[in-house]
Image: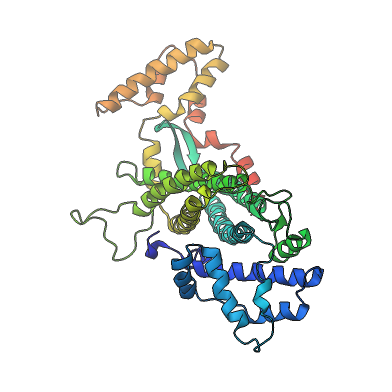
Length: 447
């Protein structure tokens, strides 16, 4: 990710400094577990010494790795320097107990899952924030009339609050999925070269996992199976798709021909280098573009599930890029989405003008039912409504002045609806007599 688009909290989680700090904690916990277990020679005093003296410097690890070409060995070598630096001459070096009976994946996979839970916590809060903004704005715009659109064509009246409410519910589902995905990836494994605990007692795994807030993998091979990570990546992709859905709607509503809503435009902001009048939905467009990254990276995670036998490393190189990019991108997207949602400008007068733009055609469904109620067959009623509607459409398409649907129906001898009933039908609020049920449900929504 480009640095200026990286939020610092999420960027730090996927930094080498944080990875090495997590490695240090896991190795220290493993030593403490071994000392408590008492089955090898490490004493509680040595474990405490390791706790107090273990350290590393990223630059030093990088320098060692340039020779070893092995990141875990480079890290362990550097940390051993700090552990043993102040040990009196002639005494055994406590660092000999570090990584005892462990393999690299014990350290790397347990650390990765812990880091992913840290990253999930940030996204969960991001989604909650967006969802609560949507819920608040839904009630603020509960009575703001607008036209609904299907296939991009005017359908029936609704309120803009319903849009916000729909987004709130979808974000709630994303929230619940993220919580579940965090739980599903919160696993650790310290079980040795092929998962048989041949050189390490399962107690060490239990101890480390408990202190990290993880659950032990019931049967790791040499790695924690990547179906955990693939599920998480799928949830990230779904959440990104939600962001894209909302941003796409904002972009569509901001079109000059529609102009019912608009993302914030800051003082001093410029929209175009060539056209000073432009106020482009650039942030919403950015969200849509970055969604493609997160969705594409989910495929990487699915491909990482199938490894050779008990383990290969074809997954690790790919996920080091895909996981960090997906989390950082989605964190950024959700932050920008919150900014759009909270500051979105709405234009109710334009909404009303658009609602009336089709000269009453949006009331056709009510007319159809009213004709049926008078005793006409549905097929004949449909013909009456469609014939009059197409005449209105033709006038609109040719930009000709002409009569609206109601006027044409009043002049059509085949129309059997009374004038009083037409008054009722051609009131947009007649469509919304049951809207309270939607907002009563939304009132109970909690993140």
